[in-house]
Image 1 (tube, rainbow over the protein chains, first blue to last red):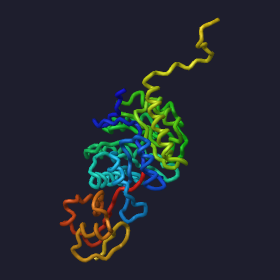
Image 2: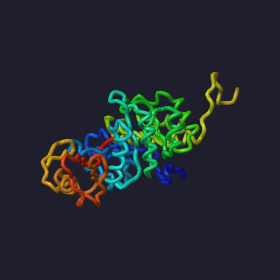
Image 3: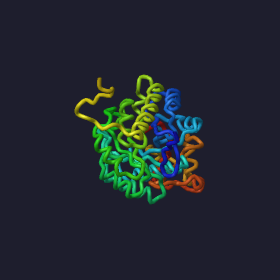
Image 4: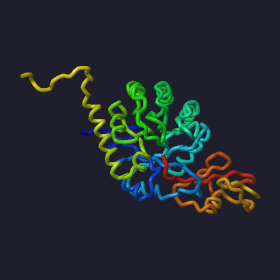
Length: 251
Length: 66
């Protein structure tokens, strides 16, 4: 069944966007990326002489996976805009996963700085994919300033707590006219399937795979979960009932 | 003269270019970008852009993350 994900005119067959953070090494990451079937993967921008420098770009190029730079670590709109501009220069892409977080304990988005950065980057010609709170009003405002997607969290980054407010996610998907990507908080496959059943167009995850006991197998599980959840959403689930209803004919 | 390169104070010869700073920090050939005093310096201008005394240079590349 042909059911591509379309973001800013670019078509993807996979509805799973992955991160690269947290993998024990590049070989583990490579096996997980291949098993996930992803076509779009995030990287962070850091100083050249800092620890953690890797051949991640070469790996993504070799696997034919598009790179999606993020602005992780930025606390203000100004920092995020500069980081996005540096990423555009370094990686020759005008796509950016916009992250502007408020504090280290929660890593929750700062809505004021986020919206400001989104508007500036859209004006500067970027395709902006903002990591946002599960706030339907903020999601609408991000869409209004021209973001290519909205990417609400299920729960805080790296917690694996799943989707804490499914109704908010459904409120967002029910009136968004850009793809909604569930970003952050996914812990296991059922969380990813639920995101798709709630009407999300894609799921973005990293930790759930890279820090799983078997990242390659969890990546495969996430791929199946996203596909299953998408199919279920398109198929249309049965209404929930209070009382039982026999599925066999009466005697 | 002194400049701040990726957070570290460095003594640089007068007239040092951004391109020279990029090789100084051992940056790879590809996937690198430079900011000088908070503004991006496009790669095409690295050779002819001179780091001023007290300049702040950030040399960034992509790493695993997100």
